[in-house]
Image 1 (cartoon, helix red, strand yellow):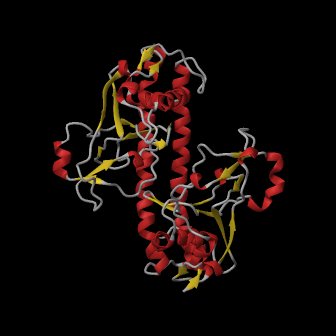
Image 2 (cartoon, helix red, strand yellow; image 1 turned 60 degrees about the vertical axis):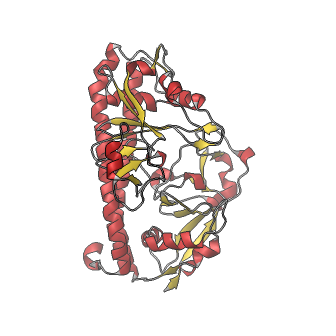
Image 3 (cartoon, one colour; image 1 turned 180 degrees about the vertical axis):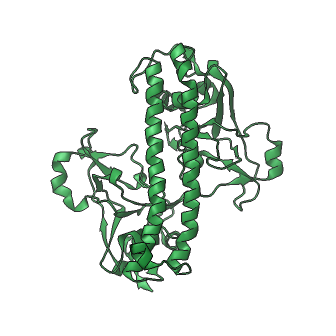
Length: 410
């Protein structure tokens, strides 16, 4: 066994002052723990630092291939908060309470990412983190992790390449999803005669185009976590169509699911995260279900709306309508509640929308349906690839599956 700290160089982020932040799109993104998901970085809501001052903090510049790990709340219900920095994540700067790991000569950087993503490392972090209000992990504790097996560098690199092929395809799917999201938003905005971020003329209410708006439920005593029953999607499962951080799902007993009068999901259902955020600040999320994403069959709990449009508006149109920047702003304005902010069904139904009966909107309905289906199918493929990767990882790290190094290096 080898101590991780002997195999890596660790750098901990800089305490940037909030007064120095800027909203300029030309500025450099700051990587905080909030921006680290499970195996990927999320840049929505990122703070930025003036480009002209980057020379003062070059030590904290991130590079492609860096492994980063949140030190505050390093593990949440969705999993370990770590990621590999990819080409779309730079330029960016490391902020305090985030660790950057770079391999020393005896360790391959890709193999390091596999070790940090392993169940053994996650279990170690969960068992080692301290603090009840804000669990955290120190640099010394990260370094004390024992790497069970350290194969020769050539084998490390071969293992990293195998896992990298899967990761690259998942990342390619994410980029495709992002491009389709932009295309759908642009098509809807053009049909409404507006730029994507421009608020159109709002003359109707959302309720006028809906046939279904409902939430589900979970039994008294809570959901199951043993994998039995029917999967129950909650707020933690709602990010956006084709994108989800959750690897494991809660469920409800099969007989309870069968008795539910509301909340059964069907292909192309639009899902809205209706309760949550930070105290006094509602943060809405809009996603969709279907075509195997995120699972084949599921119900929802009481914190999620299932929404379907009438025949005049396609589900794809409804998804991009609710995902638009102006509808996001409207939901945030209407979100209420100090402790657990959210949007109730009345406020949701009464949200103002543009006239969706115009010819241009009708003409793009089928196209937006096809785009939504494509996004969901890409998400399904990524989840299946992730499952394959998760199954391969412990076998490769343990040596139970050996990699033919010569063939992999050819």
